[in-house]
Amino acid sequence: MIELKNLVKTYGDTNAVDNLSLRIEKGEVFGLLGPNGAGKSTTILMLCGLIQPTSGECLIDGIEVSKNPIEVKRRLGYMPEDVGFYPNLSAGRNLDFFAKLNDIPDTERKERIEVLLRLVGLSGVEKKVGGYSKGMRQRLGIAKALVNDPDVVILDEPTANLDPQGVSDYRRIIRNIAGSGKTILVSSHILSEVSKVCSRVGIMQKGKLVRDGSWDEITRNLDLLGLPEIIINVETESGMPELIHEDIIRVDYFAERTKARISASKDIRADIGRTLYKSGTFPKEICLDAVTTEDAVLSYYNG
Ligand code: ADP
Image (cartoon, rainbow, N blue to C red; front, side, top):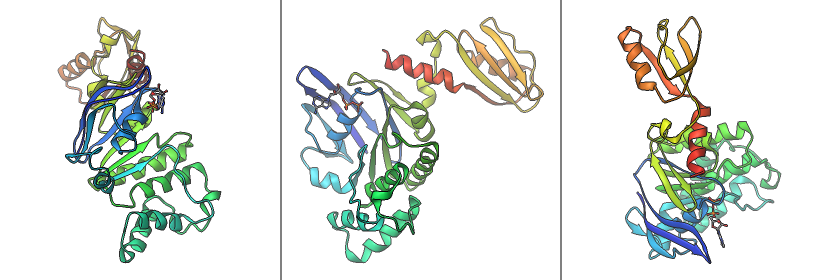
């Protein structure tokens, strides 16, 4: 549904996007991850047809963006980091304005806006948008991106500056939209946000895509990245045996030995699985701790 082919954008001496190629299939929720300045926004702006690539191309559903900008915009919903709304109008009136710009017929507009306001939890809010919190504005931004019922939704740093409740609302809404079959691209520099909502992620650094794959694929073989310590959380159905391995630094058992937190010098998840299997203990979970995952992605960021 989204394809980037050898995409390049140069500003003077800066390669903002450097030979980026990427495919995102229909219905995927893809997270574009990278530190500030990695080139995420520049990539998104080219994908939306708002700036021209220096070379390479972007395709949405097989249509080349720079050659067919209007046709692509009909299929695309874009939420920039800071969406502009009329502060003296309600959410409904703002959406009505954007719906008119998108040529949504009078007969459909009212109902579509009601559905969108319900989706983002702003139904029945009378307050003018000027008095909205950041979270409310962000939710309205998502509704705006959906006003033309797009096949592809692109959200640039959607949770920047949101409080925990705002982040949780946003995740619920994204899952809802993803369930309706739309393809979603979310950019973020916040790892935990992307890992929770995305089926696949791509990590950008200095304009290049340095890794892409499922969250599992990205975090596999962490030992190769030279992390000093790996934390593995294990949960089993019944009490587990003593976990012994030359690469284990320390193990803490709790919850009647149905849970363990292992600190190891390598990623030994497969060995732990084998030990449990041999002892007839059913593993419910053997996963890397969030802290380890965070470290792994930071090491990609740092090259
Ligand atoms: P991100 O969204 O990952 O934070 P950006 O795409 O905004 O990164 O920026 C990538 C690089 O391109 C940065 O070095 C930034 O300074 C540069 N850049 C982005 N837009 C412009 C511009 N309009 N003019 C000059 N440099 C730019």
